[in-house]
Image (cartoon, rainbow, N blue to C red; front, top):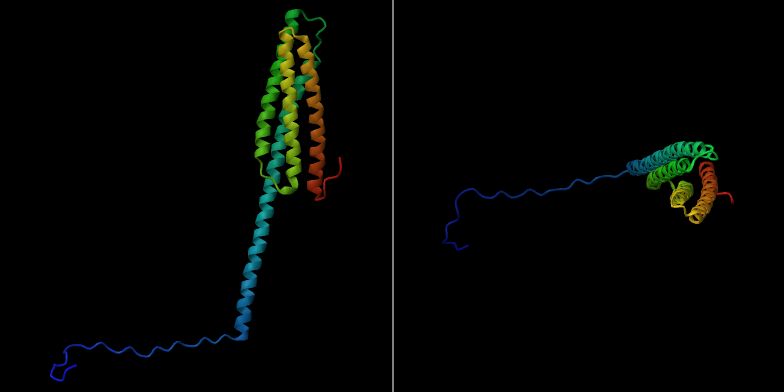
Length: 205
């Protein structure tokens, strides 16, 4: 600044004091305590996650069991209808009576198709633990085969009404085959379910 230039008047900007950052002394005890806290937090997270997983899987298994039980209850009612229908004597029925008997059988078969399709959709949508995947797959296969059996029975009834007895017999044979495959799938389901609940590998068929 020139010696002839007058010094600026007014307040001056104060100088900042020297800032000294205090040193943090980390003792061995504090370090161990911090490490112990971190391990504890991780352990709690792992244990909590395992408990949540087990709770979720238990709920999934319970829902799967409930859906299968509901399916079996409804299918039992369908089975009762079929059994009652089959026990009805037909020897003394007139032609019109036989036609009515066949139409009733077709109605039961169509009802069975609707029931199996409904429960198949519900069971297939279940999220199950990996151990129960085999049981779920087997039960879905059982419902698919039973649905096919009902479909062929319905077709047989329709063919009978059209007086196409060859087609009726062919559909009845296909229905019988599908019924046998349904029974085989139920056996697979029971085996897979037993293995899942016992925590063992699936025994050979």
